[in-house]
Length: 279
Image 1 (cartoon, rainbow, N blue to C red):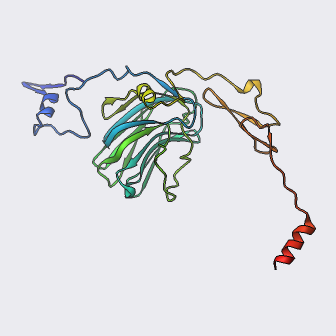
Image 2: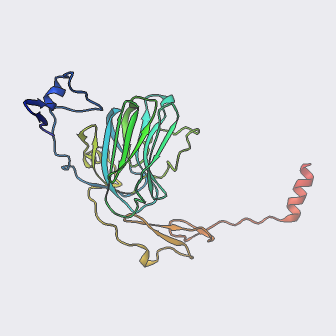
């Protein structure tokens, strides 16, 4: 936004200029960056190809706004993860759980969990997410459907890094925090990440951090289960540019249910003898 002018009768107000000068007529809410205008669609889209790929975005502390787009057909995945400034200030999460997208926050004053009003988002379509927070209140919006929330903390104060696609290796989640499937990293596309008005080049960060599980593209996922890759009646489940095999109700394990499970037998007499001798 470059110029906003309000005109009524003989009154003409340059709202942006008044905000820069901190004029009494203007009240600014949230984190607004002035004299900075960039092409927010210039960044290259990326694809998280494995659950282990994580990108760290440095320099994120007082989080006022965030927006991004994503595409996936996976039912679970951790999109964004942030750590509070100290142990008592909890976590910040945006995640997909059973196909639905949630915003989860705990900054030391209790858990806030907001479910987006949209339906399932693991439909391979492009979805748009925005989060705006100011003075203890915020709006979590997915596909133009806003969901309002209130918390006691005035700011979303993070430790300084925002993790995209999973949890950083150096962070251990407390046993007391049992929000969701935090161990499930995100697999799918992500593009146009903007944090506090600044465009984040995820592709460049992935290269800088040598993340091999990140591709610099976003393309539609092709079916993989038609070739029946799962053995011994394992169930094939379509993922984003991948497949997974569920080996439940089989006697096999492994990526494609080909590895036989170890079997153990116990001699009743020997077992009884051991028990008698022990006592």
